[in-house]
Image (cartoon, rainbow, N blue to C red):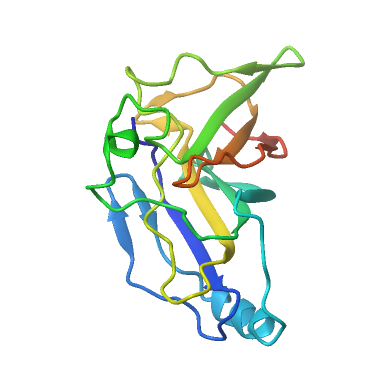
Amino acid sequence: MEGTGLGLYSLYNSNSKIPYLSSSVYMKRFILKFLLLALIATVYFGCKKSETFSDVPAIEFRALTSAKDASGKDTTTIITISFTDGDGDIGYFSGGNGSIFDSTWSTYYNDFVVTFFEKQNGIWVKDTVHVPPTYPGYSARLPYLTPKGNNKALKGEISMTQYVKYGILYRTQNDTIRYEVFIYDRSLNKSNTITTSEIVISI
């Protein structure tokens, strides 16, 4: 099943000084827009010699933050990672990708894969309740990010919002949480897995 939330991404072709900018893409519960900061990053890195990366995607943890409602209670957390991919085969079209990517039963249906953990009595416990098929889960599908041109290398950031509250119900009764994240590319390569910092939420 698809993940939930709002996402942000910025990326650039490592051979180009021109950022690949596009309109926002709405994918059910997953919205992605380019960060204005991408303009600065692209100009800075674009002046360097062309960068090359492994064709196996690599990710790094950047930040875990939260957002509160009017009463001061946390309703969402925002996971931010950076990524590189040498041949740029990241993300899917809205359809027509083939059953291995479009079947909801496929391991590769979600290419931004997130696991939720909460601290219970000092021990990190994986959430095995709020997952498909009963709940949407935490993972999501990235849009097609492969750049045009000869150099397909990608480098950028992805931010994804996770809902810790649905209506009046919270996904956790504990106030300390964290996530694990990895991504797939269309060659079925799996990136390294990152663990976010822990965050204390007000529920």
